[in-house]
Length: 280
Image (cartoon, rainbow, N blue to C red):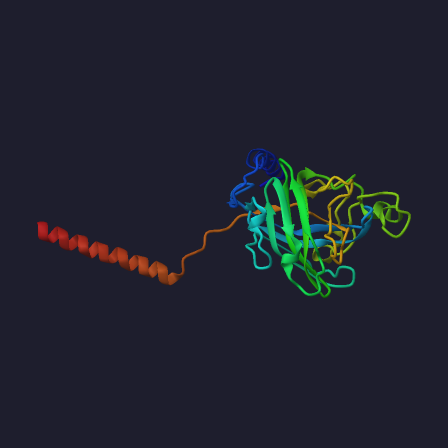
C-alpha cells in the first residue's frame, strides 16, 4: 500500500469508525481496515514534568492486530487480553525496559486502577484517567523498568500529525533538554537507538506520524503524566509510529494434505464409475 492510499484509509476510517463511543465493553474489530500493522522504527520520547526531553529511543518494534477496546473494564490487571506489542533492544536511562498487557482503545473516557498491577516495587496509587477524542486512538500499557514492574502508562494518538511543535531534540539539544537551557518544550527525541543501529533511520522533527502522541490531559505537555507513586510520577511517555499494513500470505498445505485430497478425489471417481456400471 503506497503512503497516499494509507493516509486516505486512515483518515476516512478513523472519521467513520472512531467518531462515536460505545459504553458496552467489547472488542471493536478492524479499526483501520482488515490489516495487521507493524513497524521496527517506533519512537519513544520521555518528557519531564515541565515538558523538556529526558530520554527516548527510535527502534521500537510495534505490532498491532488492528482491533481496539472500548471500555476501562476491558483491562483487569496483569494478564488482561492484549492486542499490541512493543519492544526495544536499547537501554533506557541505564536499564532495559519491557511493556506488556498493551491495549488499544477507541474514543471515550477511560479510568484505570493503577494498584491493579500488584507489584511490590510499584508504589502507584489512585487512578489513571484519560479521554480519547473523536478521531483519536488510545493505548494503555504496563511498563517494567529496572526493578519496578507494572507501571501504568496511557497515550492518546492523533492521526497523521507531527509530534509537538515539530522540533527534533538534535536541532537544539540545549534548549530541548531537561537539564540545560530549557527553552523549547515538547521536542521529539531523535537520538539513538535507531532501527538496525543505523543513523539513517533517525526521524526528523517534521515527521508526520501515522499515530502521533498528543497532549492527553490538556496541560500543554505532550503525553499524560505518570501516576502518583510511580517511578516516573509526573513524567510524560510518548510513543509515535508509522505503521505499515502486514499482508499475510495464505498458509501452503503440506504435501500429505495434497496426497490426502487427491486420494479422496480418486475414491469419488471410483464410486462414480461403479454407480454408472450399475445403471448401464
